[in-house]
Image (cartoon, rainbow, N blue to C red; front, top):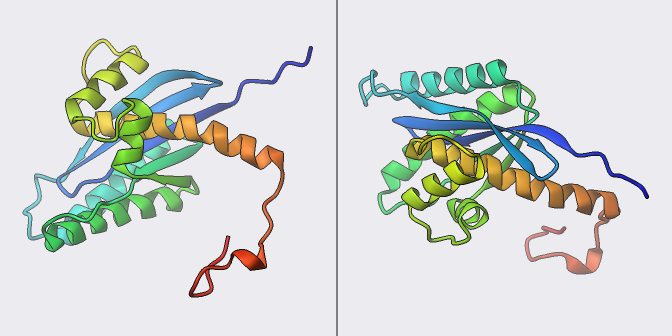
Length: 190
């Protein structure tokens, strides 16, 4: 009988926000998840009109978390289009600061929508924040509910832990080659 060694990785999840950016760190050993840390990076102390300063706080905070917990990979939430275009733009800039911080520390970054994360953690893409908090607490055997932003970040890390196994299996099965007959309009292909 051949035994397959358990995959081990440390995942840093980031839930970007201009006022509050959540982070969550988990260890993954095979199918087992272990809580490492979670929290938030807050920019409330800086006046809302000082966007560059707020973005620097997010950038520095994410780099500090990455340096402290030394993850092997990361997962970030993809920004959804909001009703207010200005809010979407601001959130996109916060997300950009977080992404830049992650890649500046040479981390691989996976991206998931809130719907994908909720489906992976709760089983429904339309789950409420409270449901995500409860399932994250349960999956990681936490003594209490994590904050909403930290729970979303931990949820992203859990989502990536589940998806990474599938990605690795696909990679082991063979290489993908470009197929000329599958080109899309505009020159894109897979």
